Amino acid sequence: MDSRNIGICGIGTVTGYGWSRERFWDGLSVGKHAATLTGGYGANRDEAAWVASVSDAGNPVDGPSRFAKAMRAAAREAISDAEGRGWRPGRRVGLLHAVVLGEVDLWREFYLERNGNVRPREYLGLMPSTPMSTFMQEYGFHGPAMNVSAMCASGNAGLLTAKAWIDGGIVDDVVFVATDLSATPENVLHFVRLGVAAVDTEPTDVCRPFQEGSRGFGFGEASVSFVLSRSSERPYALALGGSMSHDGYHVTSVDPGLEQVRACFRDALDNAGVPASEVRYFNAHGPGTAQCDRAEATVLAEFFGEETGIYSVKPLVGHCQGAASAVEMAVAAMGYDRGYLPAPVAVSPGHPQLLSGRTPVGDGLTVKSSLGMGGHNSVVVLAPPA
Image 1 (cartoon, helix red, strand yellow):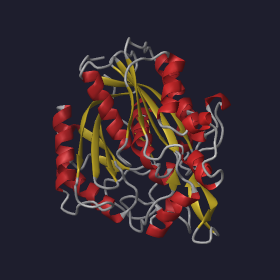
Image 2: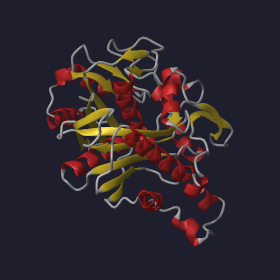
Image 3: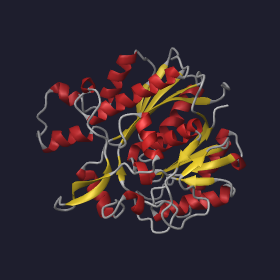
């Protein structure tokens, strides 16, 4: 591998499809969404919403919460996968964890059921440093370990931070994990009130990115991990570069002028050192909302040619909040490895460049965008392995 490139050398996933990378890919490939109709929402908790929740599985040794068990399971799978593809850890392995709302189940129990009356050891389990600390102990890693938080853009932000660590010589390798298991009734309720959560019909009908009739998304949960390194025999994909910016405009809305969104795409291509003409796949944020569809369709028209296809997997895996862009980046990386993209089948008239259904993957570049709530813009440029 070219010494200038950072490889995605291993992938691990825990999603609504199950506790493994293969279940994730198989679920996407058949085109069936991962959500189930779940009760407990609404003002009187008598309504339902479509949620692709992570099941309570994993290793009990990893702690009492789904969050800690999923985080460590995804990271372990990524490490095992990377080792099978020729990666050997260097002297300085760092850990980055992208998280917006951590240990939601335990904090919910702490406040609502136990009135803060827990043992010191249980209280320490609520701290965001605890699953990271125990993971570093398990593998004997001694590089830096820290959390990254940029709302829905946290996955992109984490990968670009990891690349900066490696490029700057701070570490040799990074285990990057993005975890969001926050789809509790209390949290989903407010998205129901905002009118963007799927409640009355299945997510693939409600969430139609870049198609007529789209009006929101189904919720999702996930923990996704990558091993990032320059030393791998068979990486899934190469991270060439990227950019992050902030609108500085509104707590939920995208700046309609799109000045910072455009700049983020322009800077990402410049940082990666590639022309827009080499981009063939636009892995969009694509939550199915009107403002995001407009923003990303505008960028597609202004920056890329007619040969660039756009897609979003949120209709299938759900909007996984703080883990969303990492879930979607895993799709792009595995697509290069498997030879196709499991794009959702279009259900209504849409953008002429929208990919629909299983799409063969060639040698072109991928741009992965994420427009996080509050104005967090991010773009990552990926390439197939050389």
